[in-house]
Image (cartoon, rainbow, N blue to C red; front, top):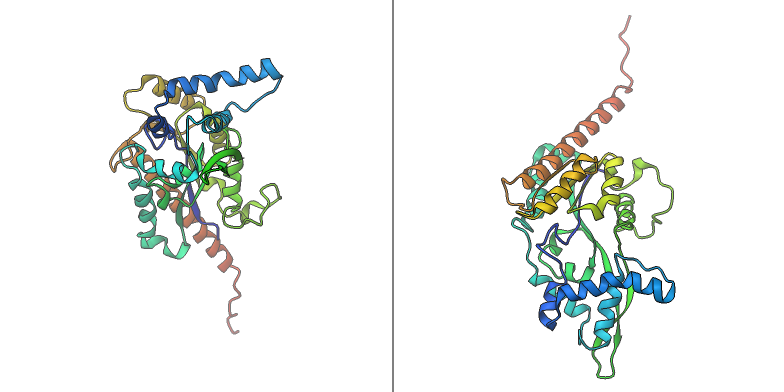
Length: 305
């Protein structure tokens, strides 16, 4: 019985105000605007100088490694990255919304016999260790993000040195299919393997994808075209971001959007919790219909003449 409702979240500017790398720049005295400007220039530079195409979403990881090797991010390793998670500025209502939406279904006795549950996932182009070190980590059932390999230095310290795994705005869709098929629970499953929809762990129509803007269009499209729901967030008083999410709504990429405030009673909280309840009611109804239909074929005693 695949009765799991999956809420899949982007991270930067969706759950936090800003970018997860900001505390790193603060610690090392690096100007974030200058760093990201350098990153944005790299694709053009490598194409001109070497005729090489690079992934615009993940080239920033190479720049972090370069800064670490040059000593500007001295001693930056995965343990230190995890420590930055506790310093992130989350939007109001995070992580409480994770707990409340899960408990909302768990505590509703009418869903008990249908074994309905809510799971939360994060799919981000950011760094997995930072997310894992943040307050939301204990409330999520899986994280897809970028991971870095360390090298041991002559003094015994460890420093990030290679890219291990990446998620970009297009491969977020692969993460969605991995959640759909249950690869995170059953790693022996190949995400590319053919699998009937009825045996997939999380049905697409039971997914809600939440993100902040146009870069998530591939993920929005996959979830929405397969029957799931999509929701966008914009920072308070950010008119440019507001216009972006309104365009996403007009173009049919998202179902709804709201200001980035997840406290109980806000538009974001009510829409997300309401959609979860809507999914749960539909799942319960479908299960009840399925059980009723199977029971109609039970043989009955014939009346004696």
